[in-house]
Image 1 (tube, rainbow, N blue to C red):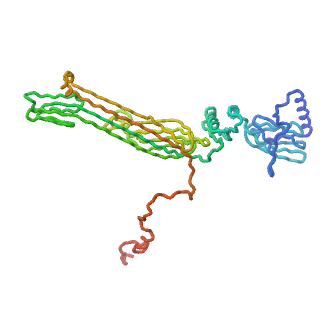
Image 2: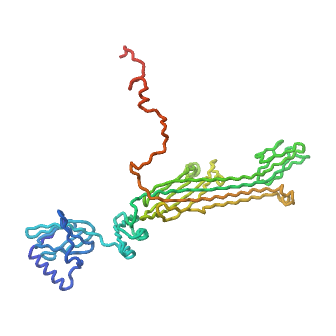
Amino acid sequence: MRAILMTRPHALRASLLCTLLAAAGLAPAVDAQAGQPSVQTAPGALPRVSLTAGRSTVLNVDFDITRIAVTNPAIADAVVVAPREILIDGKAQGTISLIVWGDGRRTQYDLVVDMPVTQLQQQLRNLFPGEDIEVTINEEATTLSGRVSSNEVMLKAGEIAEKTSSKQKVINLLQVPGGIDTQQVLLQVRFAEVNRQALSEAGVSFFTGASGYKDWIGRATTQQFPAPDFEPDRLTFSDYLNLFVFNTKYNVGGLLKALQTRGYLQSLAEPNLIAYNGREASFLAGGEVPVPIVQGGGNSSAVSVIYKEFGIRLTFTPTIAGDMIRLHVKPEVSTLDFANGVTLSGFRIPALQTRRAETDIELRDGQSFAIAGLMNNVTQTDRSMIPVLGSLPIIGNLFKSKAARQAKTELMVLITPRLVKPLDPDEVPSLPTDPTQFIDNLDEAGSRLQGGAGTIDAPNADPAER
């Protein structure tokens, strides 16, 4: 506590000095309110003097001052400039006490120092005149409070605060007319995926038996489909394909590959997820595939396993703006693709086919929006032929092979946000249970038990051993 003692002669000299400085135009700068500071007195409370950090005010009392004291000069300082006037300088935000002694009297005041208007608040006032926007800055975050006229003003003010504020966290507490007091958002999502596949393969291979035909051994194949291998006194077949023909009289045979495949897949998932205002929530319906990772090298190498997630994933962040909901949505659908996988140290590692979308949308409670057009069309055609023979007219088709594959995948995501509130105990609906009793009443079951409680089933002890 800082105390200043002033006797009457010193007070007169200080008053004369202040008068001379004022006449010379060298008086200290005092706020416009210095003529009469705002002193508020609540019933049963100390008088309260309010000022802003970096500004000054003059406090008038109705008695001659002999001594003053302040509890923390770092927040506000005071000096006696006249027998009945005290100059108060605000330095930092806070509340301290000012004690004034006079002719047999003592008065105590509460000095409340507020922070000055920040640059951000001044900028918001210039951009949105007439809006009640208050900015509070502390060590951890910037807080916006007050009432504004529309959702657009509220969101724009929050964006400006995030871009211009030095704090990483901005808390937007601005209220709009017609706003809803709930802070939870239920997101209803429907994933619909349609997958169509078609495969067509055609090819033929000719060969002779292991002993040949008239001392001739031969085989004709495009190598696109498996053909028999010659070994001493026998043939080895890895695949008989669709049609296998062999003439034992002439010891000549053929393998025919003629296959058509069509597939149709339709999947539908409807996850529901609840998130708090401004917080991210995620959902995954799928699984994890292990992937071995080789670490180190040489004799000190080790294999570790990490897991990659796949399936239907949804990540979203809601922002409630009155009766509007702003969503940052990131839906994703991934499946295992063994056809494009790799083999590592004997492990078959599948690839992942992923369809992902990320967007920002704004809509009202109960409205829906769709993310469509996530299509993937794949067409692949492989042709092989034996040179010269494959170019012959008519019979040249016997020395050609073909494999055609088509795949079409389409994904649509339909999203509906809803503002929700928790249910009271009397609002909880009944569960869809079966009224039939399938477990006997515990009291009835206990009445049918034989024996007394706490009995230990053991052989009786020999009386001689007691």
